[in-house]
Amino acid sequence: MNVPIIALDFREFDTVKDFLGKFDEKLFVKVGMELYLSNGPKVVEEIRQMGHDIFLDLKLYDIPNTVGKSMESLGRLDIQMTNVHAQGGTAMMKRAAESFKDNNPDGRLIAVTQLTSMSEEMVQKEHQTVLSLTDSVVHYATLAKEAGLDGVVSSPLESEIIHEKLGPEFLTVTPGIRLPEDSKDDQVRVVTPVDAKDMKSDYIVVGRSITQDDNPRDKYKRIKALWEGTAGE
Ligand SMILES: O=C(O)c1cc(=O)[nH]c(=O)n1[C@@H]1O[C@H](COP(=O)(O)O)[C@@H](O)[C@H]1O
Image 1 (tube, rainbow, N blue to C red):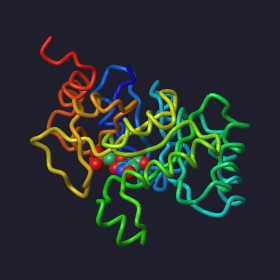
Image 2 (image 1 turned 45 degrees about the vertical axis):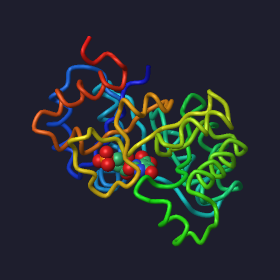
Image 3 (image 1 turned 90 degrees about the horizontal axis):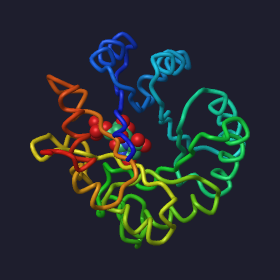
């Protein structure tokens, strides 16, 4: 079972060091725009030296040439996973996959479908689509698979249908995870770790529910046990 991915949405590397110092196990962490843009690639090297796996979440979205060239650079970093926006289109995703895999054959490249901060109404109105949110997610997931990517970012709410249509090996990496007592913050499609497991997500991504807790390690362990189905054993 894949461990929960912790979103390190901090600006300062010192804060990251303090946070990671509370854990004594190997973690899978997500380095996002806030941390990477403030600290550069050295943040990746330092976290790798601490022994943790990294999902570098920069959500690239540009013309194929620009994304392809950028993915060559990301492919040279020692990371386990990275992403693009599926809305950049098939040609962009193909170039991204070729460039990333040439440099990092074992790394996973996934595509964001519809952000978990978007509702059905927001997607239909703002993207001017007649598709339901689920159909839209499945549409972008299909393009991502055809372009040679390893999976997608979606809500757990769409994990089951993605696996049904695109197979069990095609990864669903799912943020928007909250315990019932947590604040939803800016997330709209919110799911608990237990429901995410039932919905067949491959990975859950958890940020503020852990990072803003008074005792992040205990919260991580609780979420991990709920996700793995071992809570209460
Ligand atoms: O690509 C992502 O990781 C992502 C996609 C998405 O649709 N929704 C989403 O929340 N994320 C990221 O997942 C993390 C969720 O953080 P929390 O809402 O604090 O748990 C953030 O770092 C987001 O950038």
